[in-house]
Length: 351
Image (cartoon, rainbow, N blue to C red):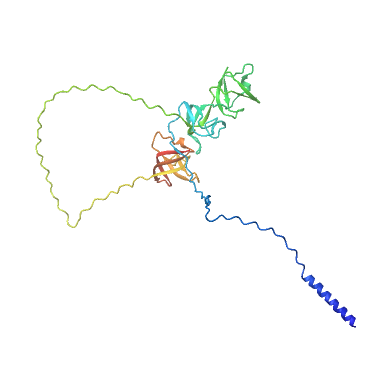
């Protein structure tokens, strides 16, 4: 009996010890941490630092500068040399934007103007004034191989069109005569590329060309007229006119009960409204509009003003498609109350 009691007590102690080990797991080994880095040496208070403290640099908003303003010429181009005033200007086979590009010219390049052509039926956004120029170097010229004498490379028919590409759908850029000698470059199908002859031409918008101004006129000096010979005239004493009596004014009696009506005050018209507007010139297709040209906003395309001028030497067709600054008198037309009309006094073109 006594042995059984000791056995039961030992079993209870063993069970209690096992439960305590399960409840309290062994503590994990400590993790070695790296030693702290030595503190940086602090300079004594008397030492002065030579490097200035860094300051945040604020970027100032730079206002976008507008392109320089230039006066646009209104004098047509004449036959002779001209200078290109823009970069990568398209040279086309015909005087319109829908024509194919034959070649390109760049700023500062010299071209030879044959004549200037002004188109009345140009689109609202395309230029009306075009310069017919000598075909620049590097441009291609093609003729039909069927009309070339293969033995001596000369033109067979009486007249032969010179084209800007190998096909009938390309623009005519010159005319050859029977017997003209050709210098072949390459052949493509039924067409032969040749060196452009002297008479080959193309077209470029006149607004991209500049010519030197004409020399000042020579002053004509006329010889002085001979001085007239003085003549002696007898002095006649003046005769006093008879005295004139002032007219007799008869006073009129005023009507009783009536007062003198004051004269109406005439109001002076308001001063003209001189404004300055910036926009792009567009053509008008409506014949009822007060002008054939208008100024539209470059941001949203809305109408700003109708453009009107009384100057005979100002051709507004030359400004179509250009961004301008116009100064003038602005007023309203009774028929077009929504859009004012500006009578041009000055036009400047923005590059």
